[in-house]
Image 1 (cartoon, helix red, strand yellow):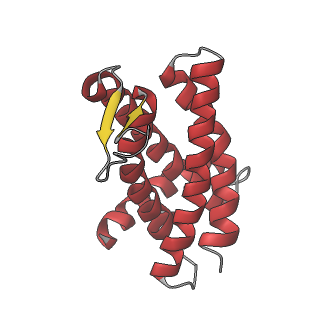
Image 2: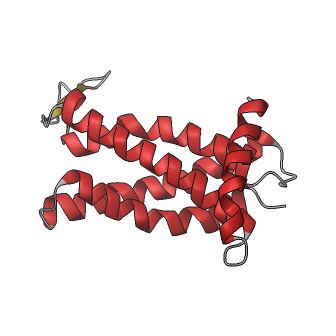
Length: 170
């Protein structure tokens, strides 16, 4: 895995050369890795939404039942939220790996501590994603994939500062 990280770092740093007078090195690495992970997120989301979930409501049976109450033992997820829940763990792991081994390599925090802090920031971003998708798709009537792109732009700023000053601080 370290070899892959070194290869990715060399590729990113190669493209950094024309920007070195304008953008800090770490910010460029973050943008490149985050941009790659974001594109992966969008492609997976599009594929899952259109071909796996198929624009259909998803009913999930709960492992327990409320036989004595009017509550159902199933929950219903809209296709755009179900797609988000499927894509989330994949991009969580790829994002952590890229941040740890390519972007924020100088952090002295132990790996498990970085991971838990990273997950906390990502959970905040997941909540922003959830409510943002609900707002843009269900209230504003924007299609799910462009809505996801808009929300992602908002979460990029939250993520960079959270990762730099909390998850991977020196």
